[in-house]
Structure formats: structure tokens, C-alpha cells
Amino acid sequence: MPNSTPKTMGQQFGRRSWAEPWKIKMVEPLNVISREEREKALIEAGFNTFLLRSEDVYIDLLTDSGTGAMSDRQWAGMMMGDEAYAGSRNFYHLESAVQNIYGYKHIVPTHQGRGAEHLISQAVIKKGQIVPGNMYFTTTRLHQELAGGTFYDVIIDEAHDPANMHPFKGNIDLDKVQALIDKHGAGNIAYISVAGTVNMAGGQPVSMANIKALRALCDKHGIKIYLDATRMMENAYFIQDREEGYANKSIAEILKEFCSYTDAAWMSAKKDNLVNIGGWLAVNDWTLFEELRNLVVVYEGLHTYGGLAGRDLEALAIGIEESVKDEHIRSRIGQVLYLGELLTNWNIPIVQPVGGHAIFLDAKAFYPHLKQIEFPAQTLAAELYLDSGIRSMERGIASAGRDPKTGDHYYPKLELTRLTIPRRVYTQAHMDVVAESVKAVYDARESTRGLKMVYEPKYLRFFQARFERL
Ligand SMILES: *Cc1c(COP(=O)(O)O)cnc(C)c1O
Image (cartoon, rainbow, N blue to C red; front, side):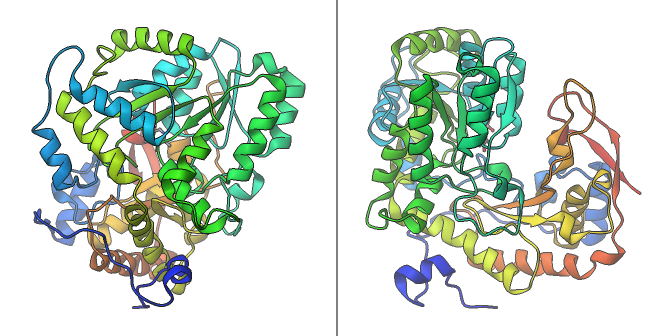
């Protein structure tokens, strides 16, 4: 095994190892079933890792969404839940945490990220408008489409090349935005949908220079910028690590500056904010806030709980405060980089540079003999599970879905299998086991057959689609 110091850590600390800024107080035993049992479980799940039972999984890297470990302070906060229907004190704690740390004025809690996406899409997108964004995200684009909008990808071209080492592959291509303004007119653009980091591009960050330049362009045309802040803490880390002038700024300072160039944000708190459930919307404009605060009572719950219990709001408020600490984010991303370095040293094709929350295996490069319609990334996820019981997620043609106008599959350039690292859950030894399993599957790649889809749900098909071996 290579040394445990990820490269970007090395710049800060020399070749000294880093370690998690916490110790373990409670453990949850893991279950390992035999290869024969995994084969059976996989067939029952239609070769879709979303349909496996968690009990049949050894190391669960399906997602980092809601799978993190809470701190003792958060658990203590759960006992301080004020379960009043209206005006719970935990709401006010959450409100001030978002105001202080992200810097927006008005807060609406929601049950999770897509609840927030639903409300903001319904509130601001007019039928026929377009929504430019730095690469689509599944639930985000769907809510934009359901509200009558059309999503246009305006991420820089480098983002579509898994080997390109651009340090900010999440950046928005301002020429692409300008071209859309010229073609459709600024009035037909609902807002610019900016995500930091960009999940579907491999957890790639947006630079401060880029968001500043986008702000200047949008100000010229009176266009709003809305931020998907789900992984903005991780984005802030990459700015600190890679962007000129930010090395001595704290994550908190960087985050606040970035958010200051945007008009509103939505959040899946199940990611950066270290809770198992929760989300929020934050806006600066009072009129928009009134509209959202009104809509939330229709779909989520009263505007001071938004579908969450008081205890959830409290755990979330504390989670926000913990997640912005430099030592937390450094060890969080350090673990991802560690796994990335192991795989890179073995020449296993992954999206470079390694992003904030996950390793993305390049399934097209893994299985050059498979056509995209034979679901290479889905195949790779199935093979990994068979090898070791590790659960990963397809982020390729199955996730991309179909064009609502033509009914054809979208054929995304990136065909990836995502190993997503939950926050504060697994140790470095688990990362070693994961790397070795990926290597075993890679070594057996030439004899691997693809899949065909035998059941396809209408919405977000990747969650429930079923496959069979070709
Ligand atoms: C997870 C996620 C969402 C959706 O949030 P949920 O809490 O899963 O509903 C939106 N945007 C991004 C970037 C995400 O990663």
C-alpha cells in the first residue's frame, strides 16, 4: 500500500500523515455474506445497486447522502428538540446558522434537497424559460423540467473529459452563457443554476474567479444566480487548496464570499451539513421568500419546520456549524484523495483530478468492449458488489434518462461508477479493502459482459430500473 498522505495534504504538512479530528464512541457491526449469496441478491435486485438490501452490503458507497455519522453534540441536540408545530426554537437556531455561515437573509427548511428544488423551480421558472447550469443533476433538472423549464449545460468542455487535469472543472463557460443570452434573450433565462461542487462531473469545483466573472456578466443582463449549495463546503476546500490568494483564508470565509455572489441557494443537508435528513432554501429577496414560505406549507409543512422534526432541525443547525470547520473538511476530502491515490498508483481509470465526495471510475475506459447501451457503469457497479459486497452507484446512461422531447436515451459523455464516501463513517482500512476490490474487478475486465434494461420506470429511472446479463 502507498503511504497514507494524499498529495494535496502533503503540500501543507510535508510527508506527515493526517488523521480524523475525532475518535469513535459507538460502533455498528458490518455484515459480510458469501459470494453465492451476493450473486443471488444481485439477481433479485435486477443488477441495480439501489434495489439491494442494505443488510446484504459490506461497505456501502452508494451515496454520501444522509449516510454520515452525527457527532455527540448533534445527538445531544436531538434530545433538545422543541416539537412545537409553530416557531420551534430549533428553527431559529437553524435560521441563524444558515445566516451566519452561508450569509443569506431568509431561510425555508425542507425535508431534503429535492423538496427545496421543487419549491424554487415552481416559484421562479416560467413555462418555456431556459435554465443554464454547470452540468445537470438528476433531481435538479427534473424539477426544472417539471416547472416548464429547459436545462442547458454551460459547464466548460474540460468537465466532459475524465482525464483532463483542469483544477476547476466545475467552472461555467461564460461564452456558452453569453451565446444563450444572445439567442434566447436575458428575459427568457429563469436563472443560472450553479452547483459547487459538480456531482455529475466527478465532484469538481467552481473557482472564485469564475463565480465572480459570472456575477459580473449576469449583473449586466439582470439575470439571477441560484446556487446548489449541497457540496459548497467541499468546493470551498478546493478553492483554499488550489486558487491563488485563498490559501490563508478559512473555509468559513471562502464559503461566505462565494455565496455572496449568488442570489439564493438550495441545500441537500444530507450531504455537507452532516445530518441523515434535511434540506433548506435560502434567499435574499423578500418577495421571493414570501412566495416560497407560502409554497412550503402546501408541499412540506409549516415554514418553521418544512417537513422536519424539531430534533432534526437542531441536529442540522449543529451539523452546519461542525461542517464549516477546516479540520473537518480537510480530513473528509483527505480520505477521498487517499482512495484516489491508491487507484491512480495502480493505473485504474478514474476521473481526474479526484473530487470532493467520491471516486468516479471511468467505466468506458474500464470496459472499452462494451457499447454505452450495454450499461458499462451499471455493469461495473454489479461486478464490484459481486467481488466484495461493496455497493457503488451508476452515473452514466441509466442515470441520464431520456430526452423528454424525442424519447431517446440521453448518451452522456461520462459513463461513470461512483464510489461515494460517507462522512465520518469508514476508516482508512476500509478504503484499502475498496481499492483492492476495484483492482480485482479491473483485472477481470476483459471477460465481463454487459447488461440490458428489462424494466424502466418513467421518472428518475436509475433508482428502480432492472437489468439482466447479456
Ligand atoms: C443530493 C443532491 C440533490 C438532491 O437532494 P436530496 O436531498 O437527495 O433530495 C441536489 N443537488 C445535488 C448536487 C445533490 O448532490
